[in-house]
Length: 343
Image 1 (cartoon, rainbow, N blue to C red):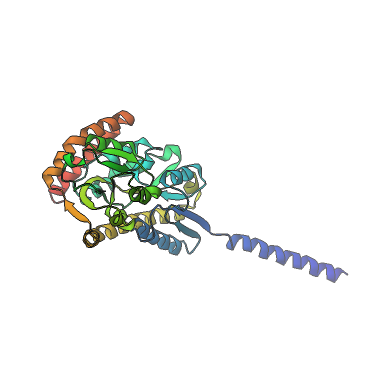
Image 2: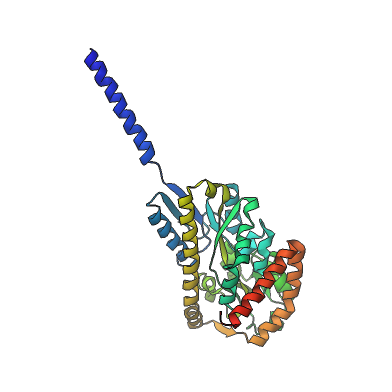
């Protein structure tokens, strides 16, 4: 009887050891869900695929990343709202939707602010770009990096755009972004906000004459089926910040925080490489599909800048921290000088 009791006690001890060791070493992996508005082949998405691989490999599978493409979890604004509330871990979004939560992101909507990708990247990767990413922490959003979307260009069914006079009277779809609308109003167009998920249908049904988007989006949404002209206006450089819930991020082990931040920068840089490498090919493919593609002269761009930039900057200054806007503009000028000097 005593021997039987001894074996029963031993069995219970062994069971407890296995139970607690299982809890320690067999814990469930940390799940990271990321909302993306574009398809799996978009440069932003390809960058995030590199993020997923890097994070999962370097955490030995203890952090698992699930990418949800084509706005499966909601549009950009809705996804950022979910991240802010803590019901979603991460999302990317254009500056326009982000301004709903943090008005400082309006500086990314200044038209004709960056003359080249190099100048844009120099500002975003510098102190002011980091300051912008950090500025959402007071509302629970941590910025990790700037995924690439590229310069925004105009397509329409009316005529090529070679200057501000060609935009007059054209009904153009914009994002739900006040400064994008202000830019096109100043240029003489009639801006109409339409959600990304309804864009193709609005073109097909001729609700608007045209729209504006980066080349990758123009190609992926098959704008050549419903639009005739692509004009390379490059009116706004449009990165897509990757944001995460601050409270969730801060609860992660420090090691995992570092790996996620490193993976975000990898995703940012790889998406930039993919986007820039593809743009010339996309222009050729759009022409092959029958679109008329034209490039604006430097003089025409300068005329457009002179027509709209000042009014947009004034509205941004009245809507957010004026000092921050001035610092942002000063950073652009400094990076321009550095690029011109060959740095």
